[in-house]
Image (cartoon, rainbow over all chains, first blue to last red; front, side):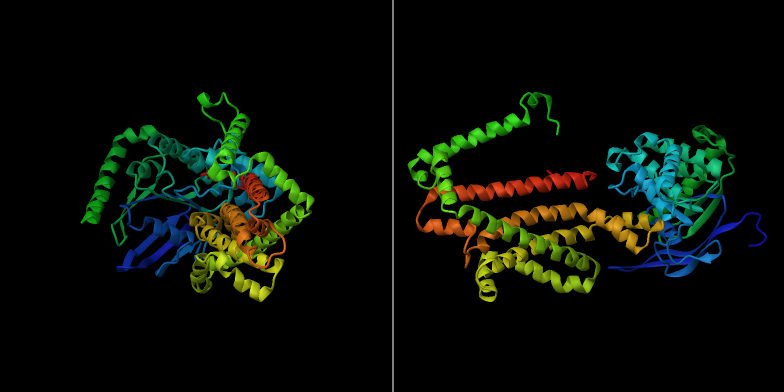
Length: 263
Length: 259
């Protein structure tokens, strides 16, 4: 650990998660080990029900693993913490608050109040290009805009690690591409440690430095693929030979797991 | 609310007037058809009937008595329902013990148990308030409880990962998320309060809209009776309008709107 060039941010050690269901025990995760380094962008792909979201919830501290531990900055995770921010697939914006007040909520939790919070909130909204919509309610926004607000809110909490649970999964293809590009731009600038779950192999490769393929139930890490395509990446990157090669490999691995699920 | 172009030539106020005139026409018809004319005297006679009650000095007494009972019972019902609903949603034992009985009592028409309450609480206003409180409590408790247990869990998670503690989550997430259900409870409660009023005044009341209708029934004096029935309707509509206004003010952020 000490010999690593980069700082270890999150350590997942032998995590096992068992759910009690009506049909007996269901092992969602088994023997998951993973190190997430600072400034790293990791994408997790796998068939639905492989425990991707469960793993994210465990890192976030929203779910306690049956056994095993998660360390963040060397400290054991026992609950949620502001060092880890989450972006949910369903946006999870507070519908009774305007766009600006949603972002301010995150700032107020950090103890930033009043005028300062107002100004800060606008700065975060500027980053996602939603200044004009500051006083709108979430119901007046499109899905893509809602998710941008959610991302702005997650950033406003200033976490060290950003956990994203299929954030673009509910969006149409065009909006999804647009948000991927925006996220790439942001990440290339600030290199915030990112743990991103998706079922979209293209999305995983275009964003991540490392793609983790998870196996079907019980979820385990099947393979870790280094994405050796240099940044900055654009949507054109998706046409490059290396991209297609990686896509081929990852897709066939994921597909095997799909078949496994269907059995 | 915007209407479609083809309908927009007639403004809403005019529609209201047309609707009113149609109703007046129907009322007039009822007043000349022999079968219904005894129960439905025409508007002039009805207003005279009301005037007679005002002259006798009972109308304002009846109205204020009923309104006091309705508002006291309604307010008390709400004040009890809110914490009970929250406790039911949060604590399984509370829910398991209380819920079956709420369902049980809810299915009994208040008219049936009014005499029992009069036996305990005596005649006058007290039993009326108790009956309305019970009825309002039951409907509001069930509605608010549904609201609290249906709060989107993702919102609670989102607040938690942003660093909110239990108190902040209650005040800033659960309370506003439940507000639409509370407003629905307030609206349902208002209509229940009025419906129950008539039952509550059925035994041992000395004044009140419901009590007066019953006593006028003994003399088949239909004009003031009809006037009183219409007054109850007007009170109900006024309440509904006020609550709808509040609902729009407080929960306009909602994605789905009720009709």
